[in-house]
Image (cartoon, rainbow, N blue to C red; front, side, top):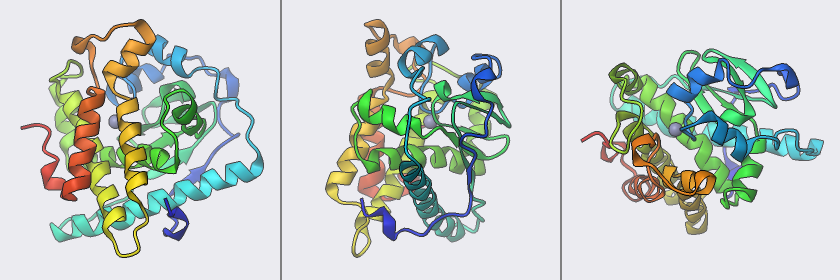
Length: 272
Ligand SMILES: [Zn+2]
C-alpha cells in the first residue's frame, strides 16, 4: 500500500503515554462500550481480555511510533477525501471524526476504555479510539498481516462514523437488537465492513492506485480474521450464532468485497 502519497489528516490526536496508565479498572465504563460500540469484537469481555490482554505494554521504538502516527493520519485523511465528496453529491456535509491514539487506557465520551476493548468508535464524541498495539495483535495473533489490514480497521471504524452521520447508528441503538446472527448489531457491523470496502475501491481504482490487489487481499484476510465464528472458536472451541455481534468471517469478507467490487455505498444495504 503506497500510503505515503496520501494527504495527512489533522484530526488525529496522539495521546499515547498520557492516558490513564495501569490504574484503570478493567470492565467499568468499558462495559457500556462493549454493548454499544465495541466495534471490532463482541461477546464476553473476559474472552476479549484473554485474547488481547497483556500485549499493550509492548515496547516499540520512537521511530516506529512516529510511523504509526503518520500512517494513521494518512489513512484517516484518505477517508476524509473519500467520504467528503460522497456526502456532497447527495447534498450533505461530511463532518469528519476525530481519532485518538492511546496506550493502555483512556477516557472517552462513552466511558473509560482500555486496550482490551479493541479499536472502537464512540458516537457521543464522534471519535475513533485505537491503541496501536492492536495492529501488532492483528498481525501476530489474528494472522492478518500488512499495512492494508491496519488500514481496513481504521476504515471500518470510519464506516461507523458515516453510519452515525446518516442516523443509522441511532436507529440500531434504539432497536436494542444487539446480538444474534440476524441482529441489527450484526447488520451494522457488516455495513461498516462494506463501507470500508467502497473506500478501498477508490484507492484501488484511481489512476496510479494507492492499493494493489495484494493490498485488497490483506483487507479481506483482516475482515475474515475478526469474524464472530472464528474468534469464538478460538477462544472457547465452538461458536454460538445467538451471541454473534459482528457476523461470521465469511460474511465480513463478503460485505467488504461487495464494497470493493461496487465502489457504491448504496450497495451496502445489509438491513434489507
Ligand atoms: Zn465495527
